[in-house]
Length: 113
Image 1 (cartoon, rainbow, N blue to C red):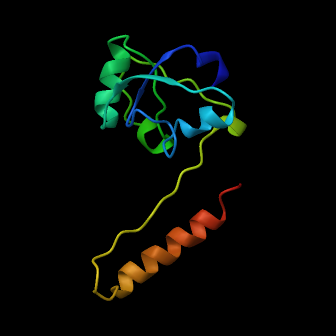
Image 2 (image 1 turned 60 degrees about the vertical axis):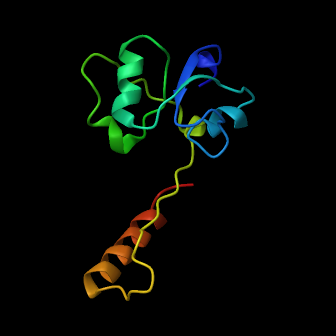
């Protein structure tokens, strides 16, 4: 990510802490967030318009616009990602939901790092 330290960034927050851009702070530079945009598709539109660069999580990479290019980042540069299963407060999980959460935990345990 360091080669993009001087770029204008498009992010979901003006502050990188607690976002995907937190990885840049850990590498010793503070990204200059030029545009705060919430949705992945909107961020891609800003990139396509030449307004800056952004990070796209792997889950969103399969739906990237054809007029932008994805560049892989080094594994040590990759920001950590937390994933949560949300359920309705005060309700018991159904057997299917319990099995799904169990499968998520097993899959997460296999992810390195």
